[in-house]
Length: 103
Image (cartoon, rainbow, N blue to C red; front, side):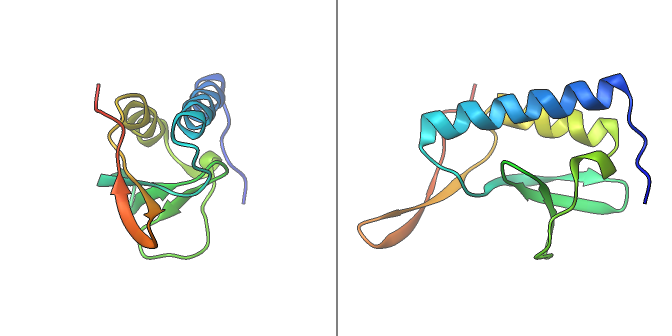
């Protein structure tokens, strides 16, 4: 499967990776980042990401950044930048939703 790669796509993927690294440092979290409002990417719906890949809703295996269209990549970047996501973190043996204050 060949993916169309241009400067803007490559730039947005780099910006998403920067945001994820910043959030990892702030939250001390290296797992999934979940979105309240999933991101539409053509016919797919991206509901979570990790440091390496986006994940399609209800699927176990990851997708790839390079298969996403520019609009979806921009929306993911925007949600990360505005802290419109949550993580699950174990506190006292229980799993809790944790958020960074929204910008």
